[in-house]
Image 1 (tube, rainbow, N blue to C red):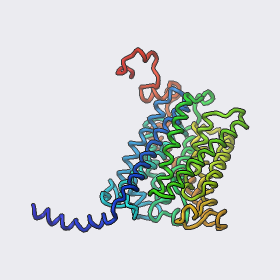
Image 2 (spheres, rainbow, N blue to C red; image 1 turned 180 degrees about the vertical axis):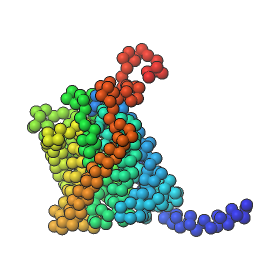
Image 3 (cartoon, one colour; image 1 turned 45 degrees about the vertical axis):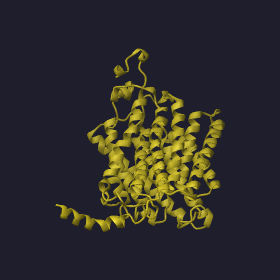
Image 4 (cartoon, one colour; image 1 turned 90 degrees about the horizontal axis):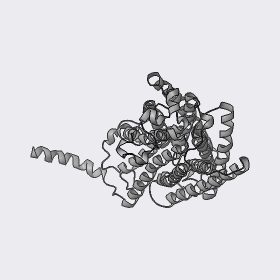
Length: 438
């Protein structure tokens, strides 16, 4: 047994040495792990943001619909998701080479000095928050069990292929010259257009006309956590520390700030009063719009992107509601779908080698060459249509086995009590034993 062990160790030694030829860069590794934690924080931030907007009787269910993504999608990512996105396969999907993170223990991410496991963790947080974004489109009326099935299928059928197209080895969008720095295509357009499809399929809420945000403080807290976490989302997508991460960090702040002011002024002019909720939505739209461009454009361009994204989202969502009577409860399509489209298209207009020398083609306005613009426009169209159609199929398929929408009775009582047997506030709870609240 001793000799067998020695022989086995000899056979494995060259492979282990080859896998660790690039020394670990502790600074870059610490940076990416910190950014991973920031992006993870965005999912609870999103949960608070959404929970403040719904009726008080649906706060707990809204929180849980988002929080459960941390566990469920996280496991999907570890089991097969990372491998299908970041292994070499076809132009459309990867393989199971890294299933269950097999063989990744000593591998590095390129020449960065970052362990591949750290890169996997960073990308996992993106995969987690993306389906959580969709919950806002059918808030207050989704069957929790159905949502679990929809979330798994959507992650596998929509998120993983699109992520491979954009960021995976040999993905067709990247090969075509398309650019998406931190997820305008992969995260926001997929979630936004899936939200549009879901909103249409789920139908309108029974008491839609009486809905008002139940807690503006939760909304503002959620917006603050999202903005804070977005620095990891965008600046972390530079992967290593340095000038590119710094530029993405500043662009993220500037676009969010410009959008905040733009939305507030628009509300003031159109509605007569600036609101805290509207301003919080404006921040999110600006952050969404700058996401695909954060590491490709100048600070001046990021201001334009934030303001233009806000203008388009503000007026487009109003028109869409009037035309379709869509009950996109928390404006998922307006914030993420429209914001993502504007950001991806303007990336093709303003991307410059002054900020990122590594890009193949500069933006149309910078170079006069429309190659990048056309590539991103094509990517926007394909991703939007694919996410919309695939979501319709997934939701209809799940509905064959589990009703996607709760009953009218459950909707009336509220999902907190009907689905989970608890609520955000109990009458007389100050006099009760905490163990008896349920």
